[in-house]
Length: 327
Image (cartoon, rainbow, N blue to C red):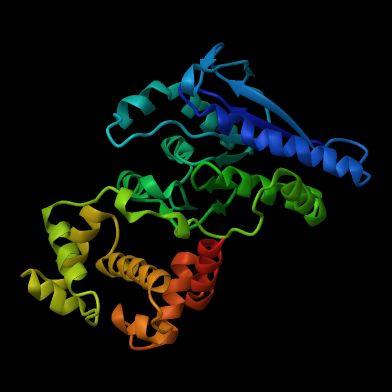
């Protein structure tokens, strides 16, 4: 296999650390591979831009090269605050979005880091694909790009040549996966150990702080959410829920999805898992007891939902939390 050409797309306001995070880990991997007998570097990295001068986050001035053909194009994230005018920000990045689109059209694999997914979506590459992004902005992303099959719990998602990652440090999860695929598991494992990077993460769900997540939706969906919150342990019954709000089941699903970007059941499951996590962390209740508290008479069904949201079985989640707390 020849040397893989990796380009990192720099643009005004991008996070400088996300420009260099993956290249630095790939550099370490090259050294590790050489120690294991590789005769040439496996990766060649360049920082590219359609602009001559790029000032990244914090005022860092980046040296950039002109856009060139690469095998992999990495799109870092940017500072996205709740009050940011996203339309205006993305409009100013038209040259970068065009570059992403052109590179993809030529067969280049595209990778976004964190909210770099917004740029990739603007380039038209995520419609009909599965994707992820920072959990903090997942709702905002889902409302803006309704045709993307968002998996907000995932750390890294690849769908037909386009890869998206979760927030910030998920760039290392991608980099290790990339190294594992192109250099082998031994090089990836050694690189992770040298860099003190966790190579066993599978989900960003345990990191979600619901207090920081903006509440999505209009008056209708917020009312439904409040009702579901207050009846957490009740059996989910869509017709009864629709009757409670004097609408048909079809109207309930349509209006709630239009406002909140998900179904009432998906929202309820998220809230139930959040409550279960709290009970696992703070009480001695059995898993079966906690399952009943959050509306599941079948502990097996509860466990399946919990695993889907957190990547861990309830008992395993409790054990890991207690080990961390004890340390």
